[in-house]
Image (cartoon, rainbow, N blue to C red; front, top):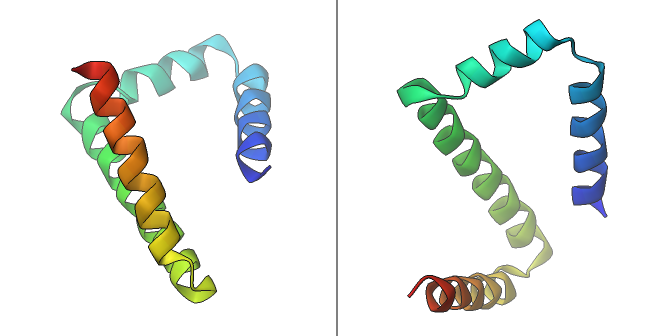
Length: 78
């Protein structure tokens, strides 16, 4: 459910932005700077999710799920 709320929020912001703003966003998402932002965002998201799961005592279950997802992705790509 939270992922759906994020998707709706992003779609709403994207729709309300004008074309010049969208082109600036696209330009800032390319190159090494965009890659750095993407990696930093993924690390922050991972750290937040791990912290949440640790406080709930569900980190072990999350490890199994991530391992299974990685194995499935590897199977598709191999």
